[in-house]
Image 1 (cartoon, rainbow, N blue to C red):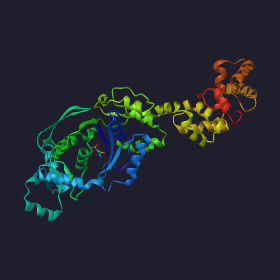
Image 2: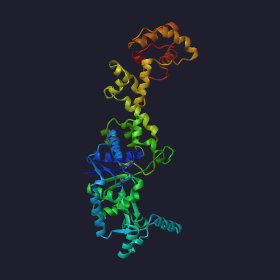
Image 3: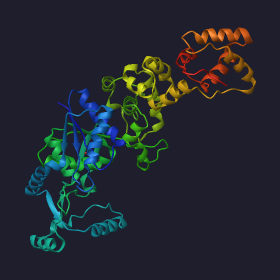
Image 4: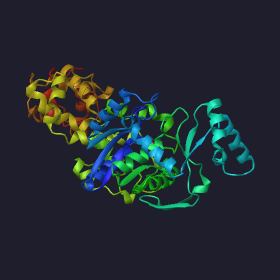
Length: 440
Ligand code: GLU
Protein backbone atom coordinates (compact mmCIF):
# COMPACT_ATOMS: atom_id res chain seq x y z
CA UNK A 1 0.00 0.00 0.00
CA UNK A 2 1.18 3.50 -0.82
CA UNK A 3 1.78 5.67 2.24
CA UNK A 4 2.72 9.33 1.82
CA UNK A 5 3.10 12.11 4.28
CA UNK A 6 3.01 15.86 4.49
CA UNK A 7 5.41 17.02 7.18
CA UNK A 8 5.21 20.73 7.92
CA UNK A 9 6.87 22.31 10.92
CA UNK A 10 4.31 24.15 13.04
CA UNK A 11 6.49 27.24 13.13
CA UNK A 12 4.34 29.38 10.86
CA UNK A 13 1.29 29.38 8.61
CA UNK A 14 1.18 27.20 5.52
CA UNK A 15 2.03 29.02 2.31
CA UNK A 16 1.55 28.28 -1.32
CA UNK A 17 4.85 26.35 -1.52
CA UNK A 18 3.73 24.03 1.28
CA UNK A 19 0.45 23.49 -0.50
CA UNK A 20 2.24 22.07 -3.48
CA UNK A 21 4.01 19.48 -1.33
CA UNK A 22 0.85 18.64 0.60
CA UNK A 23 -1.23 18.32 -2.54
CA UNK A 24 1.18 16.06 -4.42
CA UNK A 25 1.49 13.70 -1.47
CA UNK A 26 -2.26 13.74 -0.93
CA UNK A 27 -3.05 13.03 -4.58
CA UNK A 28 -0.56 10.19 -4.82
CA UNK A 29 -2.03 8.52 -1.73
CA UNK A 30 -5.62 8.96 -2.90
CA UNK A 31 -4.94 7.90 -6.46
CA UNK A 32 -3.51 4.60 -5.29
CA UNK A 33 -6.01 4.03 -2.50
CA UNK A 34 -3.19 4.48 -0.01
CA UNK A 35 -2.75 6.41 3.19
CA UNK A 36 -1.91 10.07 3.71
CA UNK A 37 -0.21 10.96 6.99
CA UNK A 38 -0.04 14.46 8.40
CA UNK A 39 3.15 14.74 10.43
CA UNK A 40 3.90 17.73 12.57
CA UNK A 41 7.66 18.27 12.67
CA UNK A 42 7.82 20.02 16.01
CA UNK A 43 11.19 18.95 17.37
CA UNK A 44 12.13 22.60 17.84
CA UNK A 45 10.32 23.47 21.07
CA UNK A 46 11.09 27.16 20.83
CA UNK A 47 9.71 27.80 17.38
CA UNK A 48 6.89 25.26 17.31
CA UNK A 49 3.52 26.58 18.44
CA UNK A 50 0.18 24.88 19.01
CA UNK A 51 -1.47 27.82 17.29
CA UNK A 52 0.37 26.96 14.08
CA UNK A 53 -0.34 23.23 14.42
CA UNK A 54 -4.06 24.09 14.65
CA UNK A 55 -3.82 26.53 11.77
CA UNK A 56 -2.14 23.93 9.54
CA UNK A 57 -5.02 21.53 10.12
CA UNK A 58 -7.60 24.25 9.49
CA UNK A 59 -5.94 25.23 6.23
CA UNK A 60 -5.80 21.63 5.02
CA UNK A 61 -9.44 21.13 6.00
CA UNK A 62 -10.42 24.26 4.11
CA UNK A 63 -8.79 22.77 1.02
CA UNK A 64 -10.34 19.37 1.60
CA UNK A 65 -6.97 17.63 1.90
CA UNK A 66 -8.03 15.11 4.50
CA UNK A 67 -5.46 12.97 6.26
CA UNK A 68 -5.80 9.47 7.61
CA UNK A 69 -3.71 10.06 10.72
CA UNK A 70 -1.80 12.83 12.34
CA UNK A 71 1.49 12.25 14.10
CA UNK A 72 3.50 14.61 16.23
CA UNK A 73 7.26 14.29 16.56
CA UNK A 74 7.47 15.72 20.06
CA UNK A 75 5.53 12.64 21.25
CA UNK A 76 8.27 10.34 20.00
CA UNK A 77 11.46 11.50 21.64
CA UNK A 78 12.07 8.08 23.18
CA UNK A 79 11.95 6.47 19.77
CA UNK A 80 14.53 8.95 18.48
CA UNK A 81 16.75 8.25 21.48
CA UNK A 82 16.57 4.51 20.70
CA UNK A 83 17.56 5.18 17.11
CA UNK A 84 20.45 7.35 18.27
CA UNK A 85 21.63 4.56 20.52
CA UNK A 86 21.45 2.10 17.67
CA UNK A 87 23.61 4.37 15.54
CA UNK A 88 26.12 4.62 18.41
CA UNK A 89 26.11 0.85 18.82
CA UNK A 90 26.95 0.26 15.17
CA UNK A 91 29.65 2.93 15.15
CA UNK A 92 27.85 5.37 12.89
CA UNK A 93 27.33 8.19 15.40
CA UNK A 94 29.99 10.40 16.97
CA UNK A 95 30.07 13.31 19.36
CA UNK A 96 31.63 16.59 18.28
CA UNK A 97 32.48 19.67 20.28
CA UNK A 98 33.31 22.39 17.79
CA UNK A 99 31.56 25.68 18.44
CA UNK A 100 29.69 27.39 15.61
CA UNK A 101 32.53 29.90 15.37
CA UNK A 102 35.14 27.15 15.02
CA UNK A 103 33.08 25.39 12.38
CA UNK A 104 32.69 28.62 10.49
CA UNK A 105 36.43 29.19 10.55
CA UNK A 106 37.05 25.68 9.22
CA UNK A 107 34.59 26.28 6.41
CA UNK A 108 36.22 29.56 5.46
CA UNK A 109 39.67 27.97 5.37
CA UNK A 110 38.45 25.19 3.12
CA UNK A 111 36.72 27.61 0.81
CA UNK A 112 39.89 29.73 0.64
CA UNK A 113 41.81 26.65 -0.45
CA UNK A 114 39.20 25.98 -3.10
CA UNK A 115 37.84 22.94 -1.29
CA UNK A 116 34.20 22.13 -0.58
CA UNK A 117 33.32 23.12 2.99
CA UNK A 118 32.83 19.61 4.33
CA UNK A 119 33.25 18.81 8.03
CA UNK A 120 36.76 17.35 8.47
CA UNK A 121 35.73 14.70 11.01
CA UNK A 122 38.41 15.76 13.46
CA UNK A 123 36.12 14.74 16.34
CA UNK A 124 36.51 11.14 15.19
CA UNK A 125 40.06 11.10 16.47
CA UNK A 126 39.23 12.39 19.97
CA UNK A 127 40.08 9.93 22.76
CA UNK A 128 37.55 9.19 25.53
CA UNK A 129 39.62 11.34 27.90
CA UNK A 130 39.69 14.24 25.49
CA UNK A 131 35.94 14.01 25.04
CA UNK A 132 35.39 13.93 28.80
CA UNK A 133 37.54 17.01 29.16
CA UNK A 134 35.68 18.81 26.38
CA UNK A 135 32.34 17.85 27.94
CA UNK A 136 33.41 19.40 31.24
CA UNK A 137 34.67 22.48 29.49
CA UNK A 138 31.93 22.98 26.89
CA UNK A 139 29.01 20.82 27.94
CA UNK A 140 27.58 17.95 25.90
CA UNK A 141 28.62 17.77 22.30
CA UNK A 142 26.46 17.49 19.21
CA UNK A 143 26.19 14.19 17.36
CA UNK A 144 26.98 13.52 13.75
CA UNK A 145 26.04 10.57 11.60
CA UNK A 146 29.10 9.03 9.99
CA UNK A 147 28.39 8.79 6.28
CA UNK A 148 29.82 5.96 4.23
CA UNK A 149 31.99 7.78 1.73
CA UNK A 150 30.51 6.30 -1.39
CA UNK A 151 28.14 7.48 -4.06
CA UNK A 152 24.48 7.61 -3.11
CA UNK A 153 22.18 6.88 -6.04
CA UNK A 154 18.44 6.91 -6.48
CA UNK A 155 15.91 7.32 -9.23
CA UNK A 156 13.91 10.39 -8.42
CA UNK A 157 10.24 10.45 -9.40
CA UNK A 158 10.70 13.89 -10.94
CA UNK A 159 14.43 14.50 -11.38
CA UNK A 160 15.33 11.08 -12.77
CA UNK A 161 18.58 9.31 -11.93
CA UNK A 162 20.49 11.16 -9.24
CA UNK A 163 23.88 10.42 -7.78
CA UNK A 164 25.59 12.28 -5.00
CA UNK A 165 29.09 11.68 -3.66
CA UNK A 166 28.78 11.35 0.12
CA UNK A 167 32.29 12.77 0.43
CA UNK A 168 30.96 16.09 -0.83
CA UNK A 169 28.64 16.57 2.15
CA UNK A 170 29.30 16.96 5.85
CA UNK A 171 28.29 14.24 8.24
CA UNK A 172 24.86 15.48 9.27
CA UNK A 173 24.26 16.62 12.83
CA UNK A 174 21.32 14.66 14.23
CA UNK A 175 21.37 15.78 17.87
CA UNK A 176 22.29 19.23 19.07
CA UNK A 177 24.51 19.95 22.08
CA UNK A 178 21.40 20.78 24.12
CA UNK A 179 19.98 17.33 23.34
CA UNK A 180 17.42 18.45 20.78
CA UNK A 181 16.82 15.87 18.07
CA UNK A 182 17.08 17.41 14.67
CA UNK A 183 14.65 17.00 11.84
CA UNK A 184 16.75 14.49 9.90
CA UNK A 185 16.81 11.84 12.62
CA UNK A 186 13.17 12.31 13.56
CA UNK A 187 12.06 12.30 9.95
CA UNK A 188 13.94 9.13 9.11
CA UNK A 189 12.57 7.27 12.16
CA UNK A 190 9.05 8.37 11.30
CA UNK A 191 9.35 7.45 7.65
CA UNK A 192 10.50 3.99 8.67
CA UNK A 193 7.91 3.46 11.41
CA UNK A 194 4.92 4.74 9.44
CA UNK A 195 5.88 2.66 6.43
CA UNK A 196 6.20 5.68 4.17
CA UNK A 197 6.56 4.42 0.61
CA UNK A 198 6.79 7.74 -1.28
CA UNK A 199 8.38 10.99 -0.14
CA UNK A 200 7.58 14.00 -2.29
CA UNK A 201 9.12 17.27 -1.20
CA UNK A 202 10.87 20.36 -2.50
CA UNK A 203 14.15 20.17 -4.38
CA UNK A 204 15.80 22.01 -1.49
CA UNK A 205 15.79 18.57 0.19
CA UNK A 206 17.84 16.69 -2.42
CA UNK A 207 21.02 16.63 -0.31
CA UNK A 208 19.00 15.64 2.76
CA UNK A 209 17.62 12.75 0.79
CA UNK A 210 21.10 11.45 0.02
CA UNK A 211 22.12 11.41 3.67
CA UNK A 212 18.72 10.14 4.79
CA UNK A 213 19.05 7.15 2.48
CA UNK A 214 22.19 6.13 4.36
CA UNK A 215 20.61 6.71 7.76
CA UNK A 216 17.53 4.69 6.83
CA UNK A 217 19.73 1.82 5.73
CA UNK A 218 21.87 2.08 8.89
CA UNK A 219 18.69 1.81 10.97
CA UNK A 220 17.55 -1.22 9.01
CA UNK A 221 14.63 0.53 7.30
CA UNK A 222 13.33 0.32 3.75
CA UNK A 223 14.25 3.27 1.57
CA UNK A 224 11.10 4.92 0.13
CA UNK A 225 10.73 6.32 -3.38
CA UNK A 226 11.72 9.97 -3.53
CA UNK A 227 10.52 12.75 -5.78
CA UNK A 228 11.65 16.36 -5.53
CA UNK A 229 9.45 19.01 -7.06
CA UNK A 230 10.88 22.32 -8.19
CA UNK A 231 10.48 25.34 -5.99
CA UNK A 232 7.94 28.05 -6.73
CA UNK A 233 9.06 31.49 -7.76
CA UNK A 234 7.09 34.67 -8.30
CA UNK A 235 5.86 35.59 -11.79
CA UNK A 236 9.24 37.12 -12.72
CA UNK A 237 11.23 34.22 -11.34
CA UNK A 238 11.93 36.07 -8.10
CA UNK A 239 12.20 34.16 -4.81
CA UNK A 240 8.76 33.68 -3.34
CA UNK A 241 9.93 33.85 0.24
CA UNK A 242 9.95 37.64 0.21
CA UNK A 243 6.30 37.60 -0.64
CA UNK A 244 5.15 34.89 1.71
CA UNK A 245 3.17 37.38 3.73
CA UNK A 246 0.58 37.60 0.98
CA UNK A 247 0.80 33.98 -0.04
CA UNK A 248 -0.15 32.28 3.20
CA UNK A 249 -3.05 29.95 2.49
CA UNK A 250 -5.17 31.71 5.07
CA UNK A 251 -4.63 35.03 3.34
CA UNK A 252 -5.74 33.52 0.06
CA UNK A 253 -8.83 32.16 1.79
CA UNK A 254 -9.43 35.60 3.28
CA UNK A 255 -9.21 37.12 -0.20
CA UNK A 256 -11.98 34.82 -1.34
CA UNK A 257 -9.98 32.23 -3.28
CA UNK A 258 -11.99 29.05 -3.79
CA UNK A 259 -10.25 25.78 -2.83
CA UNK A 260 -10.92 24.00 -6.13
CA UNK A 261 -9.52 26.96 -8.05
CA UNK A 262 -6.29 26.86 -6.07
CA UNK A 263 -6.03 23.07 -6.13
CA UNK A 264 -6.72 22.87 -9.86
CA UNK A 265 -3.98 25.38 -10.54
CA UNK A 266 -1.44 23.79 -8.23
CA UNK A 267 -2.08 20.24 -9.44
CA UNK A 268 -0.91 21.24 -12.92
CA UNK A 269 1.33 24.30 -12.60
CA UNK A 270 4.89 23.33 -13.53
CA UNK A 271 3.78 20.22 -15.40
CA UNK A 272 3.53 19.55 -19.10
CA UNK A 273 -0.26 19.32 -18.82
CA UNK A 274 -2.51 22.37 -19.10
CA UNK A 275 -4.25 23.82 -16.06
CA UNK A 276 -7.86 22.69 -16.08
CA UNK A 277 -10.49 23.68 -13.61
CA UNK A 278 -11.70 20.57 -11.83
CA UNK A 279 -15.17 20.29 -10.38
CA UNK A 280 -14.30 17.82 -7.65
CA UNK A 281 -11.46 16.25 -5.75
CA UNK A 282 -12.14 12.97 -7.58
CA UNK A 283 -11.47 14.65 -10.92
CA UNK A 284 -8.34 16.23 -9.55
CA UNK A 285 -7.06 12.88 -8.31
CA UNK A 286 -7.94 11.25 -11.62
CA UNK A 287 -6.04 13.81 -13.67
CA UNK A 288 -2.88 13.91 -11.58
CA UNK A 289 0.42 12.40 -12.63
CA UNK A 290 3.67 13.32 -10.92
CA UNK A 291 5.56 12.09 -13.96
CA UNK A 292 4.49 15.20 -15.87
CA UNK A 293 6.40 17.58 -13.65
CA UNK A 294 9.81 18.95 -14.54
CA UNK A 295 12.83 20.26 -12.70
CA UNK A 296 12.66 23.92 -13.80
CA UNK A 297 11.50 26.41 -11.17
CA UNK A 298 7.76 26.92 -11.37
CA UNK A 299 6.44 30.43 -11.74
CA UNK A 300 3.42 31.18 -9.62
CA UNK A 301 1.29 34.26 -10.14
CA UNK A 302 -1.40 34.65 -7.53
CA UNK A 303 -3.50 36.60 -10.04
CA UNK A 304 -4.06 33.36 -11.98
CA UNK A 305 -6.13 31.94 -9.19
CA UNK A 306 -8.84 34.62 -9.35
CA UNK A 307 -10.27 33.91 -12.82
CA UNK A 308 -10.43 30.25 -11.80
CA UNK A 309 -12.20 31.25 -8.61
CA UNK A 310 -14.73 33.18 -10.71
CA UNK A 311 -15.35 30.06 -12.77
CA UNK A 312 -15.86 27.96 -9.66
CA UNK A 313 -18.45 30.45 -8.42
CA UNK A 314 -20.22 30.62 -11.77
CA UNK A 315 -20.87 26.89 -11.50
CA UNK A 316 -22.08 26.85 -7.88
CA UNK A 317 -25.73 25.94 -7.34
CA UNK A 318 -27.77 28.36 -5.25
CA UNK A 319 -28.12 25.97 -2.28
CA UNK A 320 -24.40 26.19 -1.60
CA UNK A 321 -24.49 29.98 -1.24
CA UNK A 322 -28.04 30.48 0.06
CA UNK A 323 -26.99 31.49 3.55
CA UNK A 324 -24.36 33.92 2.28
CA UNK A 325 -26.89 35.47 -0.09
CA UNK A 326 -29.43 35.78 2.74
CA UNK A 327 -26.76 37.38 4.93
CA UNK A 328 -26.51 40.23 2.44
CA UNK A 329 -30.14 41.02 3.12
CA UNK A 330 -31.51 39.62 -0.14
CA UNK A 331 -35.18 38.69 0.49
CA UNK A 332 -35.62 34.91 0.54
CA UNK A 333 -37.93 34.84 -2.49
CA UNK A 334 -35.37 36.75 -4.56
CA UNK A 335 -32.30 34.83 -3.38
CA UNK A 336 -32.04 32.33 -6.20
CA UNK A 337 -32.78 34.88 -8.91
CA UNK A 338 -30.14 37.16 -7.42
CA UNK A 339 -27.52 34.40 -7.40
CA UNK A 340 -28.30 33.37 -10.96
CA UNK A 341 -27.90 36.96 -12.09
CA UNK A 342 -24.61 37.68 -10.33
CA UNK A 343 -22.72 34.40 -10.31
CA UNK A 344 -21.14 34.88 -13.72
CA UNK A 345 -20.26 38.44 -12.87
CA UNK A 346 -18.17 38.02 -9.74
CA UNK A 347 -14.58 36.98 -9.12
CA UNK A 348 -14.93 36.29 -5.41
CA UNK A 349 -18.02 35.90 -3.25
CA UNK A 350 -17.42 39.27 -1.64
CA UNK A 351 -18.24 40.87 -5.01
CA UNK A 352 -21.88 39.86 -4.49
CA UNK A 353 -22.30 42.65 -1.97
CA UNK A 354 -21.75 45.40 -4.52
CA UNK A 355 -24.40 43.89 -6.79
CA UNK A 356 -26.92 43.69 -3.99
CA UNK A 357 -26.19 47.30 -3.00
CA UNK A 358 -26.88 48.23 -6.57
CA UNK A 359 -30.18 46.37 -6.77
CA UNK A 360 -31.34 47.61 -3.38
CA UNK A 361 -30.30 51.27 -3.59
CA UNK A 362 -30.00 51.83 -7.32
CA UNK A 363 -26.83 52.69 -9.14
CA UNK A 364 -25.32 56.03 -9.81
CA UNK A 365 -26.32 56.33 -13.44
CA UNK A 366 -23.49 56.31 -15.94
CA UNK A 367 -24.65 58.57 -18.77
CA UNK A 368 -22.80 60.17 -21.66
CA UNK A 369 -23.77 63.80 -22.30
CA UNK A 370 -25.23 62.99 -25.68
CA UNK A 371 -27.44 60.27 -24.15
CA UNK A 372 -28.83 62.34 -21.31
CA UNK A 373 -32.08 63.41 -22.97
CA UNK A 374 -32.59 59.93 -24.35
CA UNK A 375 -32.15 58.28 -20.95
CA UNK A 376 -34.45 60.82 -19.28
CA UNK A 377 -37.14 60.09 -21.85
CA UNK A 378 -36.67 56.33 -21.45
CA UNK A 379 -36.79 56.44 -17.63
CA UNK A 380 -40.05 58.36 -17.85
CA UNK A 381 -41.51 55.45 -19.79
CA UNK A 382 -40.70 52.83 -17.14
CA UNK A 383 -43.73 51.15 -15.59
CA UNK A 384 -44.07 51.30 -11.81
CA UNK A 385 -42.20 48.83 -9.57
CA UNK A 386 -41.96 45.89 -9.19
CA UNK A 387 -40.54 44.96 -12.57
CA UNK A 388 -41.21 41.55 -14.02
CA UNK A 389 -39.51 39.15 -16.38
CA UNK A 390 -40.95 40.96 -19.43
CA UNK A 391 -40.36 44.52 -18.30
CA UNK A 392 -37.06 44.90 -20.12
CA UNK A 393 -38.39 43.72 -23.48
CA UNK A 394 -41.63 45.68 -23.34
CA UNK A 395 -39.89 48.80 -22.04
CA UNK A 396 -37.10 48.77 -24.64
CA UNK A 397 -39.65 48.07 -27.40
CA UNK A 398 -41.60 51.12 -26.32
CA UNK A 399 -38.45 53.24 -26.05
CA UNK A 400 -37.36 52.10 -29.51
CA UNK A 401 -40.73 53.08 -30.89
CA UNK A 402 -40.65 56.50 -29.25
CA UNK A 403 -37.04 57.43 -29.97
CA UNK A 404 -36.14 55.51 -33.11
CA UNK A 405 -32.99 54.18 -31.43
CA UNK A 406 -32.07 50.53 -31.85
CA UNK A 407 -29.40 47.91 -31.17
CA UNK A 408 -26.39 48.96 -29.15
CA UNK A 409 -27.37 52.63 -29.26
CA UNK A 410 -30.59 51.71 -27.53
CA UNK A 411 -29.46 49.07 -25.06
CA UNK A 412 -26.03 50.24 -23.95
CA UNK A 413 -27.02 53.68 -22.63
CA UNK A 414 -29.87 52.05 -20.72
CA UNK A 415 -27.62 49.37 -19.23
CA UNK A 416 -25.11 52.01 -18.13
CA UNK A 417 -27.79 54.27 -16.74
CA UNK A 418 -29.55 51.50 -14.82
CA UNK A 419 -26.51 49.64 -13.46
CA UNK A 420 -23.78 52.25 -13.55
CA UNK A 421 -21.64 49.70 -15.42
CA UNK A 422 -21.05 48.87 -19.04
CA UNK A 423 -20.90 45.13 -18.41
CA UNK A 424 -22.99 42.76 -16.38
CA UNK A 425 -25.83 40.29 -16.31
CA UNK A 426 -28.75 40.12 -18.75
CA UNK A 427 -30.81 43.27 -18.26
CA UNK A 428 -34.02 41.27 -18.49
CA UNK A 429 -32.92 39.50 -15.32
CA UNK A 430 -31.59 42.62 -13.64
CA UNK A 431 -34.82 44.60 -13.75
CA UNK A 432 -36.93 42.23 -11.62
CA UNK A 433 -34.30 42.48 -8.89
CA UNK A 434 -34.38 46.26 -8.67
CA UNK A 435 -35.85 47.46 -5.40
CA UNK A 436 -35.95 51.13 -6.46
CA UNK A 437 -36.70 52.74 -9.79
CA UNK A 438 -33.58 53.90 -11.65
CA UNK A 439 -33.13 57.63 -11.75
CA UNK A 440 -30.81 60.11 -13.35
N1 GLU B 1 9.54 19.59 8.17
C1 GLU B 1 10.28 19.45 6.96
C2 GLU B 1 10.08 20.66 6.08
O1 GLU B 1 9.04 21.29 6.20
C3 GLU B 1 9.84 18.21 6.24
C4 GLU B 1 10.66 17.86 5.07
C5 GLU B 1 10.33 16.45 4.61
O2 GLU B 1 9.37 16.33 3.85
O3 GLU B 1 10.99 15.54 5.00
O4 GLU B 1 10.95 21.05 5.34
